[in-house]
Amino acid sequence: MGARKKISADRKKEAKKSMYFAKLRDVPTSPRKMRLVADMIRGVEVFRALGLLKFSNKEASARVEKLLRSAIANWEVKNEKKAENGELYVTSISVDSATMLKRMRPAPQGRGYRVRKRSNHVTLFVDTKKTEKQN
Image 1 (cartoon, rainbow, N blue to C red):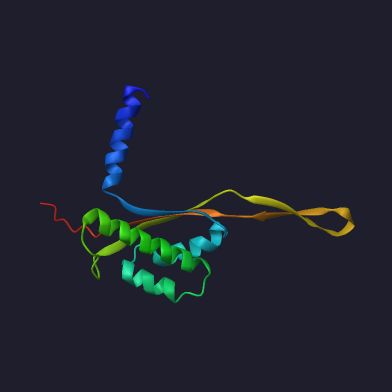
Image 2: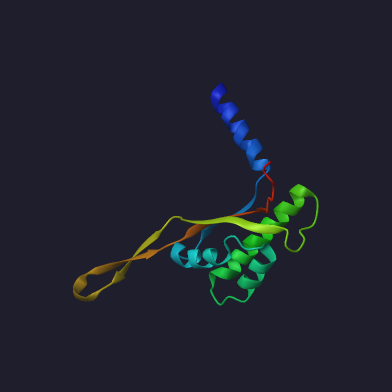
């Protein structure tokens, strides 16, 4: 690794130490369905988000709930204190498409229709609300 790349990599590594996140990779649901759940909790306080996810009837909400609990645990480990009510917020959540399994389905008159089984990656960031006064 070159000197400039090493400096850049070290800078990124230091920046990640102050970020609190969790990743869920290769989830076998379509990104569109997962984004519906992600939009529901974006910018919401984490304990309220856990309640929303617990009582949502979407299949993807159980996976996102587990991911949110993991992100909260990561925050608690890095800060060495427990998350209190109203302190942590979901700062950002992103859903990206992952690999797609491509299958063929028999169709009339010897044709074949393509079936695309989609999957996605979810990245969830949590942090405290920063209320700083500018003087």
